[in-house]
Image (cartoon, rainbow, N blue to C red; front, side):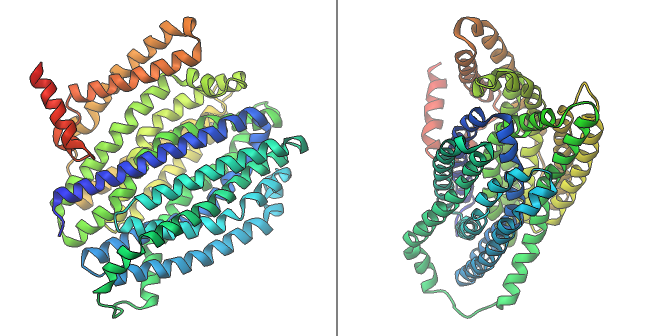
Length: 539
């Protein structure tokens, strides 16, 4: 049986692998979305953003809950030395996702004309049909990812994600440029097809990785008892009991965002904006500002994904102290990452937008205020994600669904009321999003305290990272202001960001927001601790 220290390292290592992969994916995503926005502008992004959220909604319904269910069920069975039952979970989930993927991709492809007509964007039908086949391949990938995550091996998931994104960017951008002469709607369709290409090659990649790991998997099964303990129906029911609430919860925000499309545009028209301008403003919010908020989210999502099998295994073994230490550590890691991102994007909102969208300056300036508002929500979203993973790990998957639903109701109300105020306009939707995550985060925190008895050190978890980020934010603002005129916005922004990273790292060490024990848990962490202690003794 692995020691607590070893399992702590496994959790941190898994989070680091997924986090690095997530950063790579987001950089590649920026390499896709930023030039695409500059090429096809607000109107073209309007077509793309009409199809993409619908695809995400279908994908969420198809895959959001089952990989987490696989991960938890595999981890629980391996925790009590039942590797054969763990592998049965994987095989049955693959067949289930194969069926779901075939059905969802068919519905989106053959129903594209009716869906786009219903949401008053009929020319987006090409983009929707182009992205529909991805719904077949991505769920198949998800079954492999869930199995490997349950074995606490995050490398195949990370590798397949990077492969998927590489082909999405290369194929999507290439087709967008190639089809541009035919019209913006065709160019948007080419960009959408990138997701299909990514799904195909990502699936091929993880299948190869599974075959490469087959010897190890077979070795685990070689001496295992192959007498089925659970029936096929019991396993499928177990998957669905875990997956359905998670899927419902994951579907809430995409559904609300889809409703947002109608609410925001109609409210903007009501206060005097014409339809084209309303579409452009919504494109600035969802196509320019919102994707940047998703960038730090990938780091905290990595923490949440790595926590699920660790918490589930510890909970099954009744190792409550070990479980509570991992929960507290997971939340701290999430906030250590999210708080400086929120501060930096708030302080440098306009410079960042101008850096990324130099060919759309007016739109970039307008979108900056949305970015500054949404940035505050990064901290609450990180808390929601991390604690949702904890609650899923201990079998309380219905709790975060309820909490996010309550947050979503708040979002609808806030968005409707504030978007109709002329001086606020589209920023009302951004404020609604922040309000939703704030409500869900507070409720999740109360639930984790109740069901796991975990005590959170407020000074170490919240105050010290916030203090460090505040110092960083002040220095970053001064650096940009002093250098923008001489260096230009782009270089001044990059310089300020680099300085901000250095200042924040210095501050979290100076305030001891990160302990030496926690640094030692990282890969090569022992060596780093020795170097730091040697440096201190040298002083």
